[in-house]
Length: 173
Image 1 (cartoon, rainbow, N blue to C red):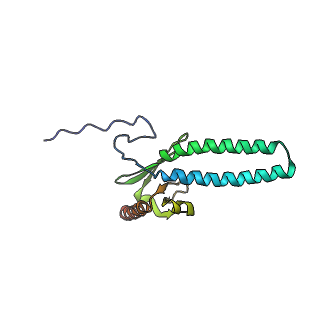
Image 2: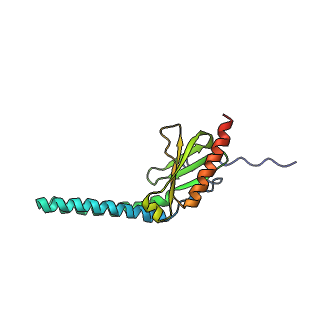
């Protein structure tokens, strides 16, 4: 006769409810580069508009606005590096866990049986860095579980697995 195993330890942090039992998978670090390039494009567009305003009116507020935009972009770039490292996902027997966020942490638990369909998307910049985003859709309008920064092979594997598991679990409903 075997001895009963000890119960799992109680969660100590509501956002990390399974610290010892979940193997989190990170997203690709190439997502940092994609996000920084995307931000740089928007900053250049914003600075172009601010420069045009400065040339047209020659007011002192335009250079101040440009400086503020550069400071904000630099701060957001530092935060972006940490934010990408906070993304993670884990596949379990009955659900998919997705976590992200620094200041406001978010843990989404999506039961396979509740998934309606799974999208894999990749914009031009993501394709250039060989990345894709997996988006999960459920009946809930509030569900926004998405996993950015996956290699296309992993995104396809995850899409196929989630679709198969969703079909299997939904048959029992």
